[in-house]
Structure formats: C-alpha cells, structure tokens
Length: 205
Image 1 (cartoon, helix red, strand yellow):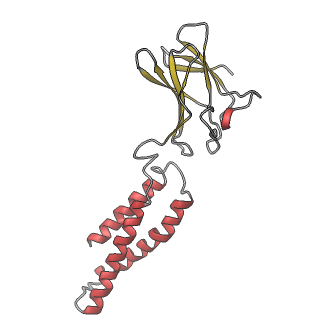
Image 2 (cartoon, rainbow, N blue to C red):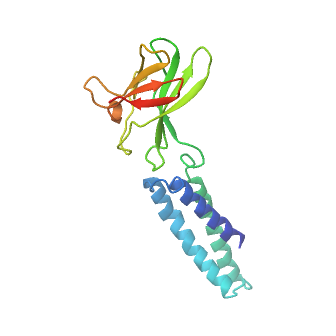
C-alpha cells in the first residue's frame, strides 16, 4: 500500500511541476516523462487497487512475486516522475535576465527580468540597484505581448532595453527600441518613463 501512496504523491508532484502549478502546458520532455512513467504507473496503481479490493493477499509464491513486481514498478516510476519534475516556475520563480549594465550617470546598475516566461502568470520588471547606497528596487513593466517569443544575445554586449537619465532628478527613460525602432530581441517596441523614487513606470510610446 505504501508504494501506491508514494506513486500517487509523485504523480501529483510531477503534474504540478510540469505545468508550473497549472500555469503552462507540458513541454516535450514532460510529455515524454508522462507517457513513459506516468501512464504505466496509473495502470499499475489501478491493477494493484483491484487486487486489494478483491482481497488477494500474496499467500503463495506466484502471488507474492506478482505483488513484489508491481510494487517495485511503482517505486521505479515514482523515482523518475520526481526526478523529471521541474521546480522552476512554481516552487520558485523562473527568472531570465539580460546582462547587468550601468546608467551613463553611474548612479544605477540595472537589468530587465523576465519572470516565469511562457506561463500565464509571467511578468516583467526593471531591476535597479543604487550604486552608492546598495538599495535595490523592482519596477513592473510590460514589454512582451507575445509571451512565447523572445531571444537573447550571443555575447555580453546585448540587452533588452537601455536606461538613460533625463533632465529630471530620479527620472529615467527606458527604451526597448533598436536602431530600426523595432523591439530588441523579441521585446515590444516601448519607451517608458521610470520614476525611481516613486517606483513606477509610465508608457511614453
């Protein structure tokens, strides 16, 4: 009975992890794991429960051997279900970031974070660190309308956005535009007014 409980718990754990807490669909690897280990474990659990309900204790050698094989199979499948369960995106956030850069006035280090991309609960933020005080702040922005598309650069000299100081203290302009006024690396073509003190981002265009 214990292997059955372990397998059911492992199956639930796998479903939660492979869907990011039901925030995304299965990818190819998760689907393969489900087919190879999940489906057989369901079948074995059903067979085992049938034996239990029928009151078929393993009194002779054959019954004992069959039961042992079923329980061992359940533990085998349980191991690979747990081993194949991703934890990023539900137990903790899956964060993708561009390289950390420094504003031209040398006051802030900054980067753009894509949090839980490809999920329904995905979001984006501008992460700032005050160079002189070390204080860090996250400002929510929206730069990905197409949640299934984005790319990264091939070296350290790339970014999803450029943060520039304005003439107003504590206000910066964040642009995701490239030289052709297109979105950088799959981002939406946006320009934001960032108010560091208020912690807000206003879309300018």
